[in-house]
Length: 448
Image (cartoon, rainbow, N blue to C red; front, side, top):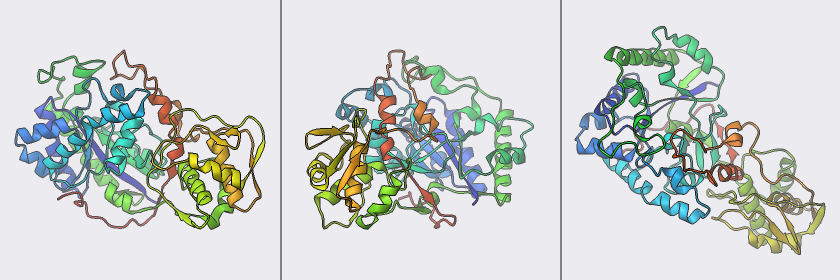
């Protein structure tokens, strides 16, 4: 199967007109090469483009997909600083203060009825924002916590597409060799080549200068970033053209876009009662599965409560807010006992960290395995001490995530909840299957 290549651009610098100029050149360069790019747009930059009547930007991006890169990106308190609180409802309220309005600004300015993706600003990755963007109807979260080249997968109700190679690390080389670069990409399922347009014409990030650790400049009175020479800017675009031409000429690669990628994905299978035996066998292996553990748990509870129900499927699942606690010894439960306990498992909310069955408490993984055992026809469900939730081994970045000390966050940011709660959403994870021949989709299907 060919390695699929996406191009994505984090459009965030609302402090420099020269950075905005780069969007025009990028859009035109990609269009001239028949490539659909993904422009992740900060709302304040979109508003600046509108205020300055930059029709050249809007027209240059007309054939490309527009995503959302938060309302203001780096202004403090940022998304992580605002949502690092114990109460999820409060975190959600703070997310909702600006983010939906910002998305509407981006859609209005670029004439779109939907956005292709959400992209975290400055590595500000909050589980509350992940769920929030999914609730806003944005189907993809691109460039998040994951950098493993595992191909797309679902997490927190959105398809996760990792960022893999940052173009500004490569395309300023005067001896850039596109064939050697392709050798680096070869053999992977999905690669996202990403860039910050600000860095095409500057040597430092705009928010490093103005917002690292705090609001270093009054709004509208920003410190300028050191600029690159026009020769270096031209070099970047020369190498970008070389790279695109090399990708298009190599049969091992396919430049694609999110519309095509999503159209080529198989939906997670509908869970059927008749498959209970197979699900029991699957649960003896480690996740991720084609359905998330959260969905499997909700399905088991639904089947127990409604013996006539034969199928189940949901698009909205949640993990935990607290570390689950499992059984300390071996136990058995009847189908009737597990059915009564099923009322503790509800759709549309976070899962309980423990479940009371008769007069004993067991963990959610304990209940999941026991419930599917009785659904498969066994007279009792068996529970043995086991790990209740863990991040699959291949997702190293999620296993090791720690946001405290992030280059952007203020020194007062404690990361009391965000890193751990992000890991606790691992039960929402499921693998996505991408077909080899993807269904064609219009690159303009997000335009009004």
